Length: 616
Ligand SMILES: O=C(O)CCCC[C@@H]1SC[C@@H]2NC(=O)N[C@@H]21
Ligand code: NA
Image (cartoon, rainbow, N blue to C red; front, side, top):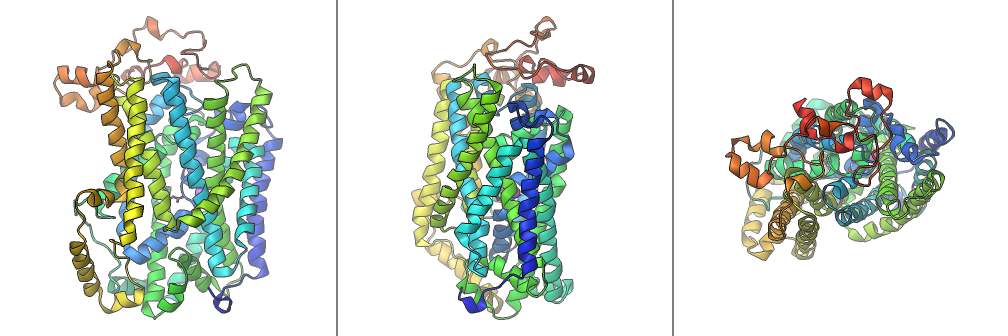
């Protein structure tokens, strides 16, 4: 954007931004110098399993609500209307299933990393594959999260791009490395508050500038930006109720059910009940976050599609135009641009710090500790800190890679979750719901899922060079002839109705999670049956969720037995605590404190059967 139109910050804006960074670093340093001073991995990686549900729930939101959502969702609403808001429907099952299926199984196994489950259920090989897939997913995602706020700001305000990326990355690495999970969770709480405040400020000022709520509503209706319920079953339709409300459930499960960043927060909870409750508490806050970013997109539409701003908007990219809108609204209100920039970087920092910490955890717990079982606590903690900072530097490099991707950042992030998160979700579902699945099936399934996901994902990027999907034109055109546009789109799509492989490539990216998850399960079951299904007595107790009894009870007993070979609950003598010795060669976590005994929590969780618990 040419300098004449660039928006500038006043001193107070820079001060507010600096205060945010200082506050985040301060919280990190506080946790480095207080409590156990981060001397053990239990404290550094799992906050001593002492966290209560409020901070955990705010931290759960912060992990996957980054600048990508703050910028990408309003840009999405502005360009395509409110269809994306139906993502909120996916939050119901997307949080209920983690709360009642994944948390009970994973919490009672007293794991340190989600991927330990894969070794308990399958084999070390499956655990390593799961861990490496997760690392790949989070490293790429982190790059997007670091790059987005810096790029958007640079495009509009001339904010030094790589200097901002560097400062953000370093501050984040600092407090994550010295403060551990406690610091990450408490900075998440602070940053989530700043995030909501910043978005609210923009909406309040924007509505007022656009002439009030009724005026905004009139313009938005006139601009046909309120999308109705689109029940089109065509899976190549980018955003419909099905792709968002159903396809989105798999996206949510891959994040809130089995992603290490979230699982680590569940495991850091004081009790299982706290973990489940924190999952429930995420629901209203996530809906609020979605509503705020959608409303921001609508206010932006009302503000610009009344007058002809197409020339200004055309000059900035789709994502940067949100920053342009914010700077335009907040210009002349000293402190508010700084507040929004703080909001943007709070969203980014809280996601990046969660990613660093979870990457350090899985690298330590899943890749290093099993190779060096005799490593001392002090050394293990030191290595964990070194890992956190090295991942910090790696993510700066990934930020540059994002620079080259060019797609809308929201779409890039959601595609990453679909292509990589979906197969990981598939392996966990294969393990929890199908006791007959074996390790060969799991590894082959994961490979097949990743292969199919990348085939469709890369394919869609390559063939999209033909621009089959008409991007909604600049707002000016939309006002004049909405019906022409939709007619044009329909005609256009009919002409280019893709067939065969091209139709496969035009699968909506919102189906990537579900599609790859089912590929893993199907392949995993077929390979398991071909290579000899597991017998139920060989399956580690506590790693199966009795889907049979819960959902397939309408099937005849023999089919249930064949497919899910319903696992019998442990008998009384089998439940006796194994004196906290290692089971399956894995640490069972600390021996239960008397408090846990009184709380009636399963004190031998790793050998405990979920079904037993639910039976009780
Ligand atoms: O904001 C990001 O960093 C990624 C985009 C949103 C990720 C998904 S979308 C569904 C769920 N709701 C959120 O707020 N984040 C996750
Ligand atoms: Na965040």
